[in-house]
Length: 196
Image (tube, rainbow, N blue to C red; front, side, top):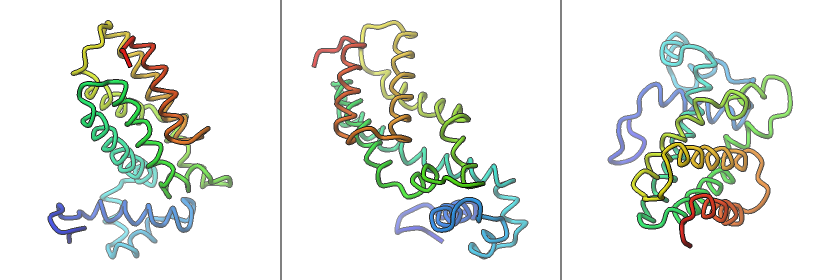
């Protein structure tokens, strides 16, 4: 089975994660069970366990899938500005925040205010070490080609700041994606001392 012409074949794991995302959006995470997923995907419950391990493993797979989508727009944004780091950061920030604004899974996780539905929230907040490390690594790879004239530890600190600020705005926006991106770019420009 393929998701679209020319796409890689969809694995059972992909189908399980897709179904879990749909169920979380429609029913809430508390009502997602391995039995329901098995019925939805058309496989045995044991197959779901074999693919995902536990419900916590399923949650991590869902977050990893969404993170991959977000980091894809980061890569495209930096590639569009190979000679202007500040513009790349501005564009990446705006693009990520726009994707977040329209992401139904993220809205389901962030807006859940009762019982077990809040189980997913720590993966994006207090237990976000893996998410932060992955995002940091991708941004560091995109920033590496730019000559910013700073020591490696200073660049690392700046990247950490950007990643954490963007994640904070993903979780709790305080302005439009464009305005937030402009403000962050203004700060980065001063930190990196890159001419506008």
